[in-house]
Image (cartoon, rainbow, N blue to C red; front, side, top):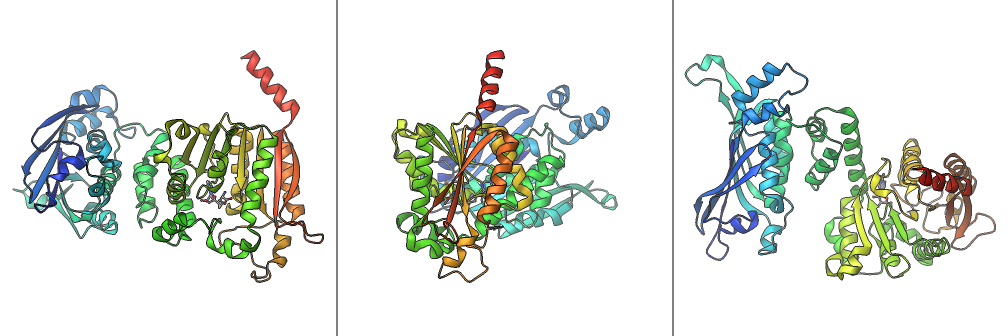
Amino acid sequence: MFLTISTTGTPERPATDLGFLLHKHPDRAQTFSTSHGIAHVLYPEASAERCTAALLLEVDPVALVRRGKGKGRGGAPDAALAQYVNDRPYAASSLLAVALSTVFKSALRGVCKALPERAAEPLPLRIELPAVPARGGADLVRGLFEPLGWTTVDARPVALDETFPAWGDSRYVTLVLEGELRLADALRQLYVLLPVLDDAKHYWVAPDEVEKLLRAGDGWLADHPERRLITSRYLTRRWGLTREATERLELVRLAEADDVGVEAIDNAVEDPAPDEETEETAKVERTVSLAEQRRDAILTALRDAGAASVLDLGCGQGQLVQALLKDVRFTRVVGVDVSVRALTVAARRLKVERMSERQAERVALMQGSLTYTDKRLKGYDAAVLSEVIEHLDLPRLPALEHAVFGTARPATVVVTTPNVEYNVRWETLPAGHVRHRDHRFEWTRAEFRAWASRVASLHGYAVRHLPVGPDDPEVGPPTQMAVFTVADSAKTTTVKEEKAA
Ligand code: SAH
C-alpha cells in the first residue's frame, strides 16, 4: 500500500524543500509504527530539480482481523477475513489515510516553522497511487478530484487479470494527480477522499468523525459538487452524523456566501471602521454605530450579572470577544461560530499568536454549530447570542434553544435581535425589507417577548427586556435585548443535585 508525492524546483527554490514541508528528512528512511502496521517514509529521488517522497504502509492483516475491526458493515466474518487478507495490504484505502494523518500530521495542518511561506503557497505536485480501491470507478475518482484544482486527474482502471482481459476491470484504479496546490490541501483531500473511494471504512465511526471531516474538509468540502456523497460515505452512511455534517456544511456555505472574498476581509481587519456584522447591515446602521451601543449594552449586562466566563455564540469576526478581553473581570472568553472564515478573521483581529501566554489562556475560538448540543459549552457563567437567532431558519430555533438553554445552561444568557418595527426609521432601508439578506426573520417587540417568555418558562429562566439604541416612542428601539437568568428554583435543584452526587 503506498503513495508517492513529487515536486519540482530550482536552485533558488529546491524541490527538496518538500522534506521540510513533510517534516521528514530526504536523506533518511524513517519508520513509524501506526495502529495498523508499520509505515515507512523514504525518498526515491531528492535533488533540487525533483524530489519524491514515498509513504509505504505494511499492513498487518492478522492484527487487523484479530482486533475485530475487519468485520466491515455487519458482513460475515469469513468474507471480511478474505477481503482483508486479499487486498488490504496492497490497496490504498482508509488505512493509508490514517497512516497519512499520523505520519504527516503537521504537514496536514499546513504547519512548517522552517519554511512557513512555502507551506502557504501552491507547489507543483504529482501524486501517484498505484492501487486505489474505487467504488464508483474511474468516473467517480475524476468527479471527486477534478473540482479541487488538479490539472491532471488520470484514473485508469486496473484489469482484474492482465492475462485474461475478458474478465474485465477490477475495482481498483491507478491514480495520478498533477497540479499546483498547497501541500496541506492535497494531503487533507487524500485523507478524506481515499476512504470515501474505498467505501468500507475499517474503524468504528465515532461522533468526533464529523469534527475530523469538517476540519480536514475546511476550505474545499463545503463547495464541492459531490459533498453529499463524500459526507455520507465518509461517515459510513450513519445518517444521524451525515445529517449533522451536511447541515453544518450548508451553514458554512450560507455564512460564507455573503463574504466579499478573503482580500476584502483582510482589509476590513486592518481598517477599524467597518466593524459591523456585514457591510450591508453596516450601511443601514452606521449613522448611530448601533453595533457599538449593542456591545456596550451586552458588556453592562454581563458585568451586572457578575459573569467571569463568557461564551460569545455566533461570535462572527470577534468584535465582542475583543471588547470582553479588555476587561480583566472576564477571565475566560470563548467565541463560537459555524463559519471557519469568520473565525479566521476573528483570530487575526485578536492577534492570538502575538498574545502573552497568560492572555492567550483567557481566550479560545471554536468552530461549532449552535443547533447541536455541544459539551464544550458547559460550565460557563454567561452566554451571548448577539444578532444570531435571526440567522437561523425558524424551525431550527428550538434546536438552538435546547442546546443553549437546555444543555449548556449558563446562569445568564443575553440575546439581541433586530426590532423589525424600527425598520421604518432607517432612511436607507426600503419599506418591508429586513436589514440583511441572511436574516431569516425579524421580530416585532411582541414577537420577541413571546418567544423569550416561552423559552424562559420552558427552561427555568427569568427574563427581562432592555432597549438598545434610541427608544422611539412609537416603534421602540432598533435593537431589542433580553437577559435571561437561571430561576432560583432551578439553581437550587442544580446545587442539591450536585450535593447528592
Ligand atoms: N455576534 C456577531 C455576529 C452576528 S452575525 C455580532 O453581533 O456582530 C451572525 C453570526 O452567526 C455569523 O457569524 C454566522 O456565521 C453565525 N451563525 C449562524 N448560524 C449559526 C449556527 N447555527 N451556529 C453557529 N453560528 C452560526
